[in-house]
Length: 308
Image (cartoon, rainbow, N blue to C red; front, side, top):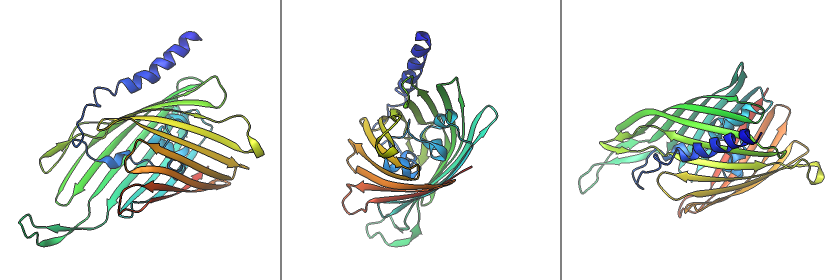
């Protein structure tokens, strides 16, 4: 038993330490930051503290290994995200338990509003319009490695276009989940967006690699027969200092949920909040995301979840 615990601890730590060589990019050398925008209004309302707390189709982004240790069959998620009042982040994901593990497919698109193309001379005469966007399509697989440990992997095709310039590539995500001996305590770890450089207009840039570790705790019982979940993540990105995410969810009668969270050490992001409703196989969730960017609106994320 002691040896097993040691192996699990080493695996979780090793996954994060493996990111250190990749976390060497200088600020400004990293692009496609939209890959860091998670999916699922539930997880967003909990401050993005989701590497151990995410579930269902949203977990395909945060940690698909979570689903390998849960009694879930098929989950579908559709999302609309109004980001800063000038961008849209749309996503669709489906997760399905098959023989030998859990498989998934996730699509994510990040779109800016239409921009005016101007000439490069001093006058800057308008020459038309264009709309920048990023796309990511990922295939996911996760499986249990025992009663308490699971691993997962995502392989993503990514594409970015800005005006007349575009590039595409592949990226890899790795995940681990461990259910502790303490009932309700879950640990998670991830290493995301590992891949080669991309290039726009002869300007190469690295992908936004990040290592993330976190935990989630759901006590066996809470007041009013509700279900409380507390979550915390630490993120180690390759272009800036480490960040912290805190979140909480209180679910009443298994149907209604209230959520709140905070994103710490971010210059442009702050508090989050939201609510959700479940009835049968259908779930609807909303998240509010505070923006600290002057002149830009707060974010609003909506997601529809179906389980069967």
